[in-house]
Length: 316
Image 1: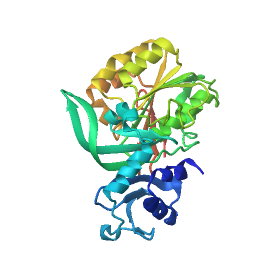
Image 2: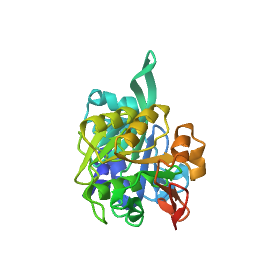
Image 3: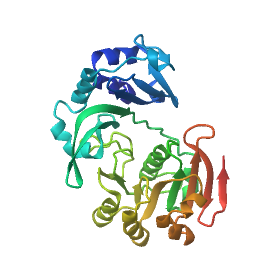
Image 4: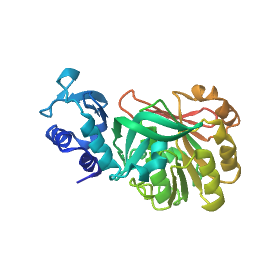
């Protein structure tokens, strides 16, 4: 049973059987959403579908299977192995990571302790996001990220849901293993939301290569500094930079001899010039490569690759 199929084990019998009857291809199943008293919804091949009681995909919500509170709470019990308290810290982030690197987003009543989230109570909404590896998706861009046998400071620019984390993950794997004129690199990954490695009990469920070290569920700013001090990485990789708290750590990466591999939300280099944190980095040519993604043809489509001066190196 592969990673996509194994996720079905977290659902109660009725929902699991209907998902099995639907014969969904795990590689194309992106999300399964459960809401108490509402129809079950799947995001499949980039489109939203309801599932009928007979396991058929439909676009009409009235024909969809309605999720009961008992079924949702049974799913929560399976996900947490009958001990939500054991996942207290993860729950404060709004999700639990399960075997296979899949993330189960959780929403309900938030209980605060002064200005901090203490716990989530009366859980009524779940979003199961399936983790997908696309080994080889970076094959065509990877040669552009190497100059004179060294990895380039690289920024992946992408709108939401365009495959930036999937591409980031594969670049990490390839840089870690080495090849294409690049010796294997020690890669330090700060995986703040467990999306890159999909770690379960500290072990990445996705293949990040043989020379990669991961700080899971660690804030980016603190994590980058920890890696620099303790793991001597050649490359530091992070997802979704842009917070002011990241700026000092990003500066440290640029000035300590490490290479930075990062992603940011946007649709063009001009977009990121408007972000206060990134303006100077672009202006002073800190990033040597920019990869711009879109979903013109499919998620993860590489639209352009630029060098530090904005010269287009490749266009798809």
